[in-house]
Length: 124
Image (cartoon, one colour):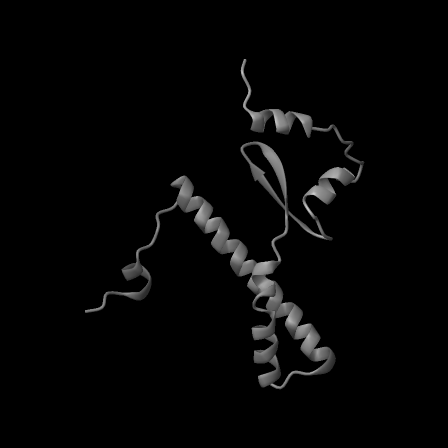
């Protein structure tokens, strides 16, 4: 059987790791550093496998200043500003996650895509 370089790379990086009684795993340091993982990761089930990916924070981080400006304009400050910011940031991440899931389902053909007219109506 001939394997592609990508498959060979995958085989070289494959490791067996232990699952604790609490269902916890330790990500090998090499993987952690190669992927520049932080305190949180995205975990999903794909084709019968658990896939762990770096959490893409840059999307929500781009809007952090906008969220803060809006909250300050609403009169939030101090601890209340911080509390409300965390709520708004979590809501934003959830919305991005749902949009990403929808895009994946559209790409798989599981759900139909929407046209411009479906979303905004016709110009006439």
